[in-house]
Image (cartoon, rainbow, N blue to C red; front, side):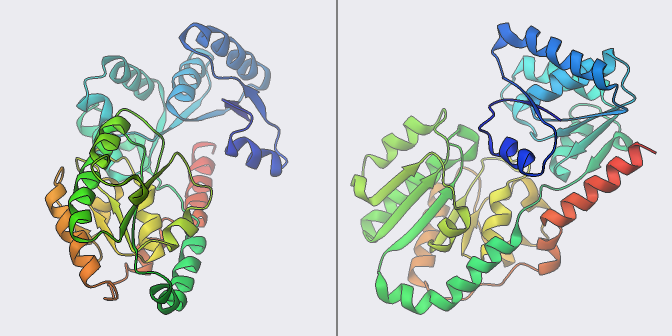
Length: 338
């Protein structure tokens, strides 16, 4: 197996634990891409694979191009992103997407949203696409839900704080600034509310920081990452995830994690949430780019803190389990290698 990236990446550690042979090629900038092409070419020539499977944009561009050039029969990649290149007119990204689509023999889409973008925006034939959802370790999140139910009385006795969580890279299309604006307004009425944001600092970080500068700094926290997301979710009274368009989120793994955890959620309908029938039964749905609706729903949750919610059907959640994902990939790979 080839990994383009840092040997300290979690995936590298997991592959080594499995005892698989792994060669790591450092990811380089644009000027170093030629060397990456050469090193990957040598590996393909050495092993003469029947199938090349790529995941990640950088790996896809290199892997699928070289697989086509070196006559690898099956050329497959996972499409993890949706409409972002089109939405922000990222010309190079759109060109690379079309080249990868054309050279691949099969494409894995992580959701129906992604499949629709491939078909409707990039003219890929549906027969070339297989939808395989991302997998989540549902047991970890459900276990924390069980603990939360048992601990709910003790928790309410320990603290009167209302904890609001966000897990999102701070980039414009994720909509974190709308949650921040809602929180500033909420603080005026409910000073015991606290906002916890987990996510890499990107282009909207400064905007979010400026918005939150209107409240005391001890009322909110930023974390670039959190090593225990199930525990983080377990400690929340509400979770907010509000991408700014229905196609902006390609999948949205935090939707599944939060729903499996059983905590009250405020969502916009994007990514994989489009595939849940009547999501308003299970979550508080708000409009895109609407801080007023986020505020009103947070206020409602504070005022009815112990109110029970309708759980998402187990049959819907289970299609996102790690086992289900693994089985789908095994079936797919056995199929293309017949």
